[in-house]
Length: 288
Image (cartoon, rainbow, N blue to C red; front, side):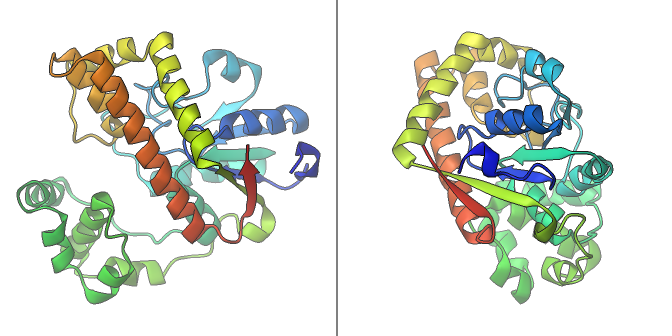
């Protein structure tokens, strides 16, 4: 697909795996059409990571209007619901929404169940059980409908479903079945998902992480070292745990680099699988 084939009027949604070139395409469309680039990535919202999460550079943000990047403090919980509430007022302007977090796009285009938040005491109970018993134990406690629907390879989703049942006495699947109408149905948007060649993407992931180190990713990790908490959602930035381990003297930098690159490739694989299953109605753009 050529850029001229992409709508100038409808909101444009761009999903794709990490390092696939989403942000560059979003900026090209924003420059062409006078759009705001809005972030739909779960980690690029955090203020403490710019380089390691591949947030737009200060120069990019100065050149074109951007929204929902780096606006959340590192220790602040930020859910899909938070993102959807922040994104809602932006929908009145020309927009290109870009990111690799499929759940945000699902919430935007399919609606989001208004599930109550988890109180700290229940979250602590869930954390303790997850640490001591693992996700299988929490999965075994779920109601049948939720257990049948949930991504069993995603411990975060399993824990969240367990917390919902513990707090409300009602399964997550039941809450999801009461989902309200979406803010932006797919019929009202140009929805694109990038589908890169695996070998091409793997090479890009390798190059990009090494470039991140050149641009200061290790120094960025150093700034997060003193009060590092691996349980924070912001600490899930790909490569962050590996660079922190290096800074603590636990592994060499080349080991941290290879571990981070491997984690990025694994994450990209999970993203591709998720997109194939959940974005069949989106226009597929093959790369390179």
